[in-house]
Length: 320
Image 1: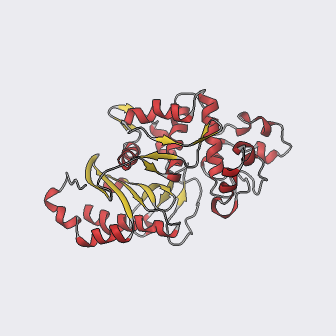
Image 2: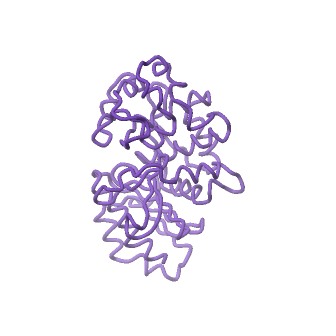
Image 3: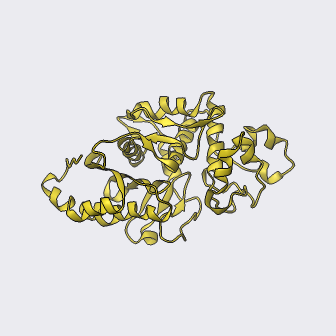
């Protein structure tokens, strides 16, 4: 399915044999490009969009929900200690654990020992009680000191959201986000009554793009401030250097469950992005007034670079 509503006379310049070859070689599944809030180009390997796993892009959706909850007064502040929500932490003798704040979970700097780029996540998935497993991990650093990618911390955020709002993360998202943007019935995996904070969401690539467009518009959608503008700005600002050193440059610096990559880092342009395992991306490029949702066949961390090459080699040059 191809739609080129803007610059339709230049379609051939974008939809080239080289592009088609790359889509196949890079095992791209879906592409939705919005520019100026309008659909520029849409392509699906199965000829239709579908609800599919977005993996860790879930984290950026959850970040939005935390911002919405703060805006509605359901959560007081990102400086709230998470011990306010978990009684086991309130009773611990480890002062460092009692010092973990919501902002530390959002910036992946909780200090909990969670090595090898999220390796304990798979042990957590096999545990009977995910929350207890996460909170039982020893402290490796002071909160706020070191970055460690931690889907367990994201799951704690989902539990905090559930407790603070008195409803499930899915129900809260449906009322305050999904319905407002007209999402096509996303699915979200849950465990023991808590929707998975670090992954687990399934949605269409068009809905991914619309979510990115919401952020590009500062949280405003059809005249309604769905997400506080201040949250959009702070969550997509750098709070830690993250994985800016990683090669190839798949990642970047880290905000509040958003990645940030500067032109100095990637050699092309400043942008922020949500990233899911194996190459699921929501790219937001303000200087181009552009959002791109790209999904590919997940094959590991390194192959995820293919989605970025699609952005760098084809989409941005066409829009220049």
